[in-house]
Image (cartoon, rainbow, N blue to C red; front, side, top):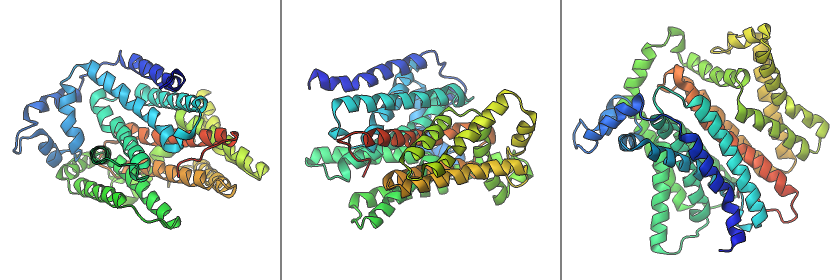
Length: 434
């Protein structure tokens, strides 16, 4: 490998140093981290006292996570800091390789896209760790339950795209290792309920692409899909999930128990947070989204409507900054109830949704069908991952942690837009994922 080839990895070297630097002052082994560390004493017992078995029947179906938690919580905090930094680094390394035919790019363009990926995931780190992962559960417990499944899902889809679906597996040992890593990373990812929904949605999107492209469904797809179905059954059949749901439901007021109320809560926790609390990832994405739509659309005057979500976010954030009481009261009224909230709030939310759908339609009609399709899939999965907040057995007081799944999807969406814009200006452009 020549020195010029090594330059493309410089952003990752700097990024891992920055990540570890930001991780270093974090205090580990607090709250739940301490409790889970004690689980190591029963982790390998073959009876009902087993830590993982006990949690499956009385609290959580996350078998894989619960197995690794006692081990990691008993190691020095520096080990977690290094591993967690690597987990985020892996996502930044693999994102451009999933979205682009990366090997066909020049070293200069690889360096640009690697740098951009590091920047996007640094923003993801700042948003998640500095604001939304400072939960009472402790950093080790929280990241292992929320951030690590994201990274393992990215690893799985990279292996599927790079090796398995492309048939780039010749040797028996290599093939066995790739399939083992792909299945293990899939199991680790779908061990988390929300990641299960997201991964399941991506596989449904793949199936639609196979159908529309009149392609034969690979046997490996069927294997992975069956693993996902087993994951669904494991979560649905878990007595611990039902028991935790009953405990948490008892703590909720009666108007949050019915199916309609759960849907109402899930819908509004997402939109209320998106509109009223400064969301760096969403703010940057909708700015790029409006600009991209304006650039690629054949009807640029109409495409100005695509900037509406970005404008609404600026209006809301500015109103919060100057303490505009009328707007604040309207937004506060919609915190948990869309049905009973102010008409002004409803109009803002509907405008947000309609402008986003309109922009996606413009992108699709402009000939960017893959971009439009990918964005639609990621948007839908991002919304569903947050809409489910009203249905899962979770304490509403800590649902802010769930937004990191949406943020990761928005990071990928932002990368798609920026990559495609840059490639459209290149004479030897390569295609997005296909």
